[in-house]
Length: 335
Image (tube, rainbow, N blue to C red):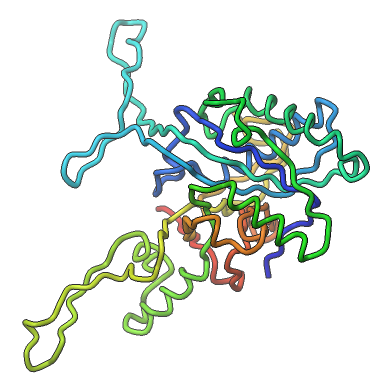
């Protein structure tokens, strides 16, 4: 069973504006940066804050999207990314276009933090939050650049920390206040249970159905004709399978190993010659965009790392709907 790491505070960085983030989250999905990119941002921010002298330990993150604008055009059923032409080569020939999907975002980040100093000296929290926001402003989210707050003098655009070290009743009361400040928007949570449920539904009529079939089925709107009666089927109606399903989307949730771990420096042209190397591919599951006011506990919005190198799994997990570990992921190998 997945369990979110412990934390004492939630650090909220509200209404961050991001320009030209990567909208292609994996070889099979697009529309929003992947949770692995957000996890990488959290880790990089943790290293930079410690290098600046702050003793903050980030154990998880949550993301709420308030607005987005994908840089694409649509004509009928066909969509195309807005691309830029690269400069010509040295010989004057036209350089090839590398397709890049870009998206403008307005998001809020919710970071789970452990910091004993904040418990002892609460007066230092505000200054530390401001410093974290300043460090983040010089970083990138999925290749996108952070823009200055639209109205930095307003309270809704200022970072803040909330103490969650009290009892359960206090935690719920404080989270209710936090989630209302995140409106309007939608939080991304994991729905691994929907993937297992759809697989069981498909195998009831198609025993050969795989998790890939279930994942593709949830990634689209499936229509079927439902007759009202066998005697007069013309009075039937077309129905889709999205009723009561919510805003579910296919998402990448991590990486699965394709080969054993190679020792550091043994693979030519690796990015880091001091770190062990391993070939991986994307892991896929199902996510859901849900309004923050429907969340009951901070653990429902928080994503955290759950790696099992011995099993070849490097995954981002979320406890919104916990399911058995062997029915959560789609690990698809390409030929």
